[in-house]
Length: 175
Image (tube, rainbow, N blue to C red; front, side, top):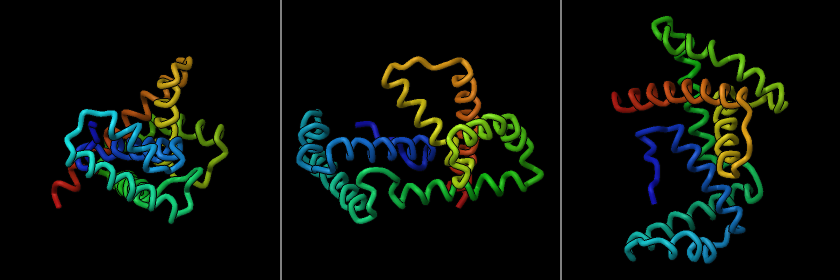
């Protein structure tokens, strides 16, 4: 099981965690089903299987405690979005971040269009972008047709989130 590392690409990690939340919901937050379908069916050592089971159990417990059995995101994932949003805001206010600011303004029309379509104006621009990217990945998994306009928007959003992720990684490695 190839788990994206939080310190390598925070956005990839976030999308992975959102996918795990959805997978756990698909298995009705039942650790026995998760073990049968996700853990036992793979070629893991017994130690890895034990570790994975504990990790999934912890996530299931958190989802139950936080009341997100059917929808929503774990607080740990919301915290990542908040951290990225904070960094995004700081970068936009920093006149030395000309590349990031230019990337943002190139992406902004897509963000505005997504927010208009979704009606979710109360979430951050970064969450809007991450949600769009996650939705795109789900469409690809379902082998659904994706318009060229959507592909263009996702390409631009991906570039901005990749730049933000790099800035995040650089910030964290300098601490």
